[in-house]
Image 1 (cartoon, rainbow, N blue to C red):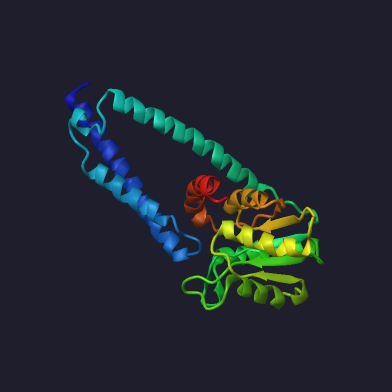
Image 2 (cartoon, rainbow, N blue to C red):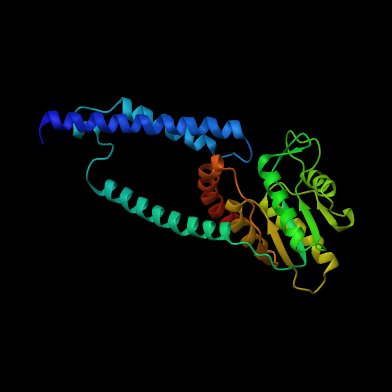
Length: 262
């Protein structure tokens, strides 16, 4: 390969990296604007900076540009990358499958998971969960409802209380609503809610339909199953701007929950 052609390839790669990096930065800003459950947006910020840096520092010499030299280390990196890619495909496949299946059949309880509030106002993600819950309640109007979520930073009331107020405002009887106000994460949602339900359903197999955003459904269901619940899902949609962030973050969250949330 001629030197001039090699220079052209390196410059083209540099431009591609810079463009991809800028797109990552734009997406990062978009997630901040639309808000919601965005705890993984920093990933795109970091990737954007890395891509832009690589693009700007594209070398003229291919040998100098290579990050890894041929050899055992490079082969190990390739193997690790391949294994990681397989795990991404499998886990994301399970996440997507749970995200698109809606169980409309009747169960003993409807469980709505909290997703953050600002003061007393539900976040965008929580509003989506609440409106999906109203859809399910229309199908099964007499179902008992568990609203699960404690009080976090910047929240004037618990997420459970905010959800209860929303449901009552939209015609749901307060007598049908049970509050769980201690939980701060998905594992605690399931653990504390199960404790409440088992007090009134001793010795029975409890059937629960979970409402949460689509990307979150797979993890919510398997954590509920670990608590001994028979679980169905009624996933709520997610703002399109948040799809890359939430589905990427959930891959890591599933691995973390599988290992530690017991």
